[in-house]
Length: 143
Image (tube, rainbow, N blue to C red; front, side):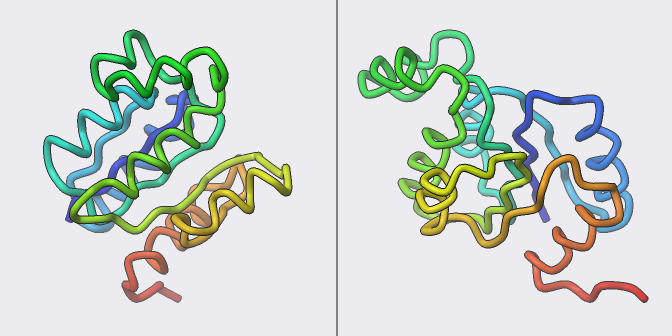
């Protein structure tokens, strides 16, 4: 099982990722830009992506996303998650997607609906995020 966390607040996510990696015996990667997430997604398919919406595009996003990234870099500097949602829809093998975000903007939440299975309000405690990951992967939740 392969899980990708995409969040620029690494200190919280890395501890959650370690717990999930041990609990599920999974390959868990943590990246903090859209550029790095796209590279990981194209390197190897993921079963689950847990992502924030408020993430940076990353340096030289044009290298990864091609010419269409030019408009994203200027217009969506900190809303890289929307670009990542677009990229996720282009994958042949699409992972399940959880949004772990503080976003409460109705329009943004509506844009996520097509791709995102569930939204987990951020910051979620480790147990809440673990439960959401298990449910998204349709695995038994203990207790």
